Image 1 (tube, rainbow, N blue to C red):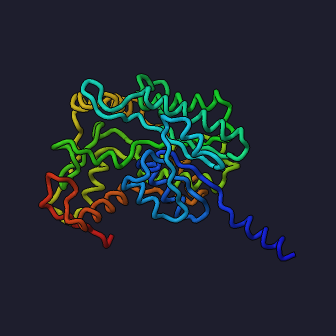
Image 2: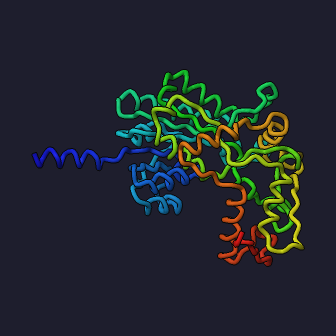
Image 3: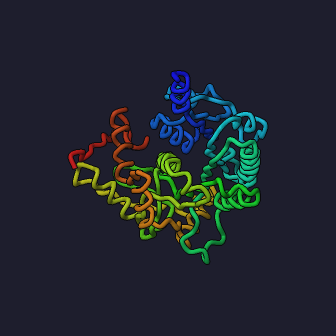
Length: 345
C-alpha cells in the first residue's frame, strides 16, 4: 500500500520537459526565465554554445539544463528533442551584416524553419511531444495592403504554412509578436534614445503596435496553462499601440525636470534602407498596412491567462533605473547626463 502511494507521489513530482530553441536569444532568454520561475517544468535550453555568458546565466536558474543544438543542424535538434513534451521554437533571419545585403537573410531563416518543423514532426510521431509553440510575427491589420511584405516577415509566415503542410497544426500554438521595445535601443549616432529624443522608424502620427520581448515568455507560460484551448490556434500579440508622439510623451513623463522636452524623431527612411533594406521595407509596411493585433480582444485573453503586459512606461522606467544604477545615461552620447525619475507616481 505504501509503495503505491509513493509511486503516485513520484508521478506527481515528474515535471514535463520543455525544449526551448535559441535559448540565449532575446526571446529564448525570456521564455526560459519565465518558465523557470513557475517551478512546473524542466527546461531544456538549446543553444549553439553552452559556455557563452548568456548560457551560463541560464544554467544558474532552477530546473534548467543546457543542451547543445543548432537550428542549422537537424541531427542536433533530433537529439535535443528526445523525450520532450513541449517545444518552443523560434528562428532568426540575422546572419552577420554585409554591404549591399545587410544582416537579414530570408533563406537562412527558411532553412532553420524547415529543419525545426521536420524535427518537431519526428518528435511528435514518437508519441511524447504533445504541444509545439512557434514564434512567428504579427499578421497585417489591412491584408489588402500587405505587399510588399518584409522578407523577415514572409519567411516566418512561410514557416507557418509549412507547419500546416506537415500536418502538425493541431498540436501547434502560433504566437505572433509585433515590434519589440528593445529595437528602440539602436546604436545609430544621433538617433538613439536620449533625454531629448525618442527615435523610431515610422512617422510621428502613425499608430505602431509594440511589445516587450520578455512578454513572449509570459505568453508561452500562459498558453501552457490551457493547452487544450490554445493548441491549433494563432494569436497576434502586442503590449501597446501608440503613435511616435505618444511614445515621446511617455518618456517625457518619466523625466523629473520640466525643462526637458522629449521629442519623437523619425530615422530617415533612406538611411534605414541603406543600412538594412528589409527594416526600411518594414517601416513602409507598418505605415501602409500596420500590425493587426486586436488590442481589445487581447485584454480578455491576458486576463484569462494571467498575463500582465509590460507597458512602454514600464520598460522605459526599468531601462532608466538600470542605467542610473550603473552610473550611465540611456545612451553613450549622453554619458554625463544623470537620469532622474518620478518614481513616486
